[in-house]
Length: 77
Figure 1 (cartoon, rainbow, N blue to C red):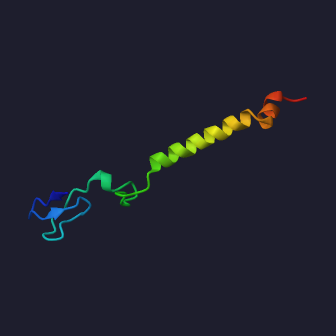
Figure 2: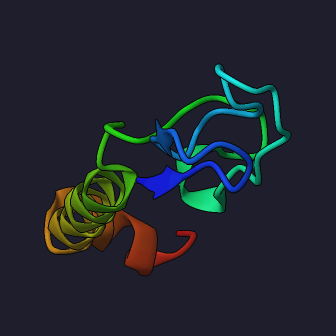
Figure 3: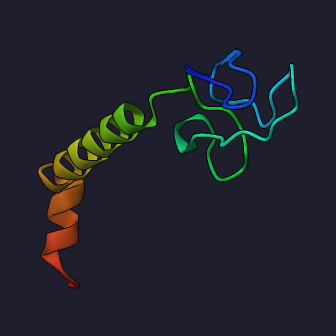
């Protein structure tokens, strides 16, 4: 949170203009992504991507050590 430099009203940081005096505000990057959608309390994408990567690597390793992996390493007959 910060105060409006024009009138001193407390603001949250996502306002583009002060609701009281209309002074243009600087919108902080952490509140908006590229599309302009608020992501203040968004989905934890970092954890989600890490879990998907671990599952994907696990599937690849499981396939390599199974009969499917043996067929892939066997080569043409």
